[in-house]
Image 1 (cartoon, one colour):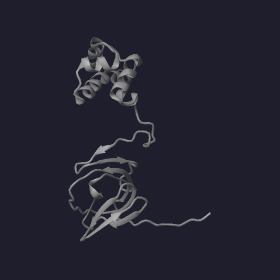
Image 2 (cartoon, one colour):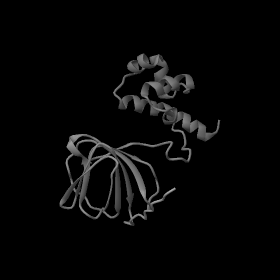
Image 3 (cartoon, one colour):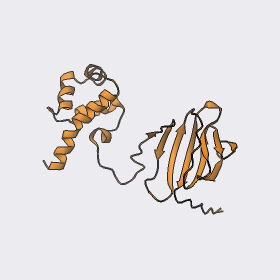
Image 4 (tube, one colour):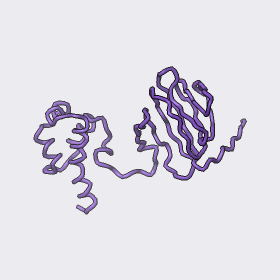
Length: 189
């Protein structure tokens, strides 16, 4: 067994323990849900038993995660395959769709109720509303944006966006950190 494989296998047990404890589950609860014995679970988590598919598959189902996540599989090169939602401090979830620093970045946001707090920064933003209704505060103005509509603005203008009517809103957010405005072409068939 090569060193990289040994390191990957050694890291699985502690990862399984972190997942279990982060969900507030005891070994007994996981045993009941996965049909694996408490002893087997404990031995895998402590590294006294090598994790095999007959253990990992029931645990992936129990924790509702992919096998890739359980074993920390290397990326495939396509970032769409391994999208990682990120909780936002101000509330909601953002899923980065691109990983290109310095170029246009794309995010899918699902935002729940949150208090407005205006921010400014360099760049240019485009927001397309996928579902729900967006409330955008831009400078001294306030705008309500319906599903299917797109807005763009200079991020140096004080701004905040979130759901209108205290519901959730789902948006596609494109951001150009250098402030470059888009070139839009309308094509016809």
